[in-house]
Figure 1 (cartoon, rainbow, N blue to C red):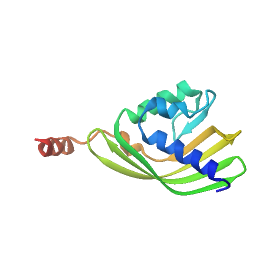
Figure 2: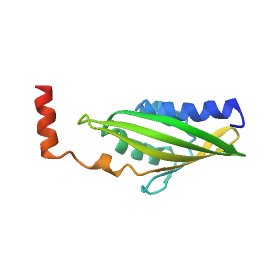
Figure 3: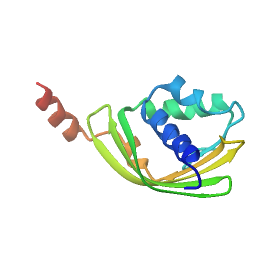
Length: 137
C-alpha cells in the first residue's frame, strides 16, 4: 500500500458497506460517484448507487468483506476480498471478490466490483424453508 491514509480510506469504505447502514455507506461517496457492481448497470451518482445498495442489503442480515490483499498504483487501488453474506433466511454465503477503486484528491471517485454472488438472489427451496422453520420452532 502506498500510504496508511489510502489503506484506511479503503478499509473504511468496506466497513461502511458492511454496516448495512445506507446513510453511513453513501455518506462516504462523492455525489458524482461512478459505480459498477458485477452485472448490474453502471450507476452514476449517489442516488443510483443507493438503489443498487438497497437491492443487495434488502435481502441481507449481515455482510462482511475480509480483505485478502490491497495493492495501489497511483490513484488506483485493487482489493481482493472474501465476501461473507447472511441472508434474511439465515443462509450463509461466501464469495471471492475483487474491487478496483479509483481515487481523486485522496477520495473515492469510481468503484468497480467484480463478484459472482448470483446464488445469493436465488430464493431458498421449499425444503430449506421448512427445515429453517422447524429449527426456529
